[in-house]
Amino acid sequence: LPYSETDSLIPNELYSGSRLSGSTREKDGGHSGAPAESLCSMVLQILVPFLLAGLGTVSAGILLDLVQNWDVFQEITEIFILVPAVLGMKGNLEMTLASRLSTAVNAGKMESTREKWMLIVGNLALKQLQATVLGLLASLMATVLGWMAEGKMPFNHIVLLCSTSVSTAFVASLLQGVIMVGVIIGSKRMGINPDNVATPMAASFGDLITLALLACFSQWFYSFLEFYPYVLYLVDLCYLCLIPVWVSVSSKHPATNILLRSGWEPIITAMVISSIGGLILDKTVSDPNLAGIILYAPVINGIGGNLVSIQSSRISTNLHLNYSPGEVPADRRNCHNPCHTFFGSGANHRSAQVLLLLVIPGQLIFVHTIHVMKGGHTLPSPLFIIVFLSASLIQVFSLLCIADCMVHCLWRKGKDPDSYSIPYLTALGDLLGTALLSLAFLMLWCIGDSGSV
Image 1 (spheres, helix red, strand yellow):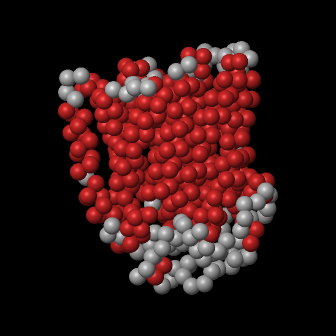
Image 2 (cartoon, one colour):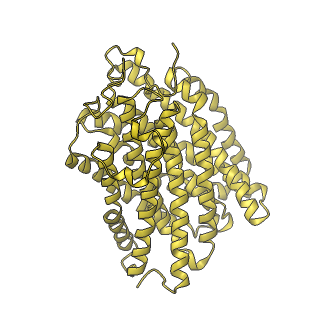
Image 3 (spheres, helix red, strand yellow):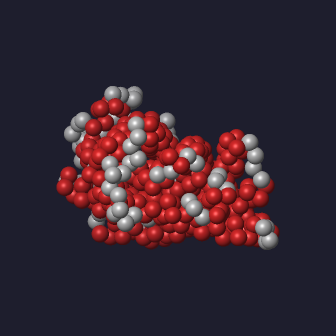
């Protein structure tokens, strides 16, 4: 049977009763196959995982602040370039998995036990393959950017970056993938729309887990670097030898076989974009006057990525349920006034409003949490709070507008937004967040505000 990238993981032909089979459904605002949800229900479903995800990113920021003084971070500063790229892999891998499975659940395609587990195993194998390749590419990107910035790069540093990046990506992907499958299945059984909870839950403690693994692997490999460098070569060789296994398993399911051939463009492009954000972070952290950014970078990047991934997943599900591939609503055939994203009566307009409104109260909670977790010795200055909130608001507003245009554009071109949009959006979130935050800290330093009182 012929399959395309826009088939929602489990091809429609396998399900005679699929809500997606047949002609396009109710295109002009009628009842679709998506579960009906009230505004209150949507807010509550989004709020809890959003707060959990925020606490995860806060914890990641605190952890990054602690480990930046470890020997390996002081000696091999290029590891900071890896941070956004490796953390961004949750957007490239976990969130796209969550979005695709959410679409499959809402489309009624997770009913057959055999197909469900074929789907899950195939996707987890594909994700491990992608994690291994992305980890390797991220280390090479960090090497190139570090060499361009410093003019030199010792070979043993390159080997350490490679071993650290691949090990972190592989182990984090495996742990978070299993958790993600549990969240999707649990949401389905509890009658909760997984579009609202799956993507932020994928990131809830993903940043913390990934950053902890990155710090531990880098310090561990650093201890081997001088006397037992062959350990690092063996580690890389083991991961590379597993690649044929993941290719074999993921190719057995039609849907993952499609992604095996065509799903590399967005995740590799996203990794490059995130690495540029990492270079900005590396240069900012190296300035003692701006080192405080390390606490807040995971927070602004994580929250922006979490919020836009919810919106992207919801729009994608709506398109899968109501429109044929290549067909979009009449008012979305061209990119429009950005403000139109937030004004209208549709469910996606309401969710965009809710997500934007969550930014300020959410970030206030997270800034206060950082203050408490740091011991409460100093309060953030009012000017710092205003500048930080402004940067976060600009970032999320921009991302939601880009998501609205990008998801419809991808669908119109016959590409599955579940696999393509979230990597681009989370990577742009990392780049925008890091750039805006660096600008904010630079502005505060120029006017003499240290960020605390």
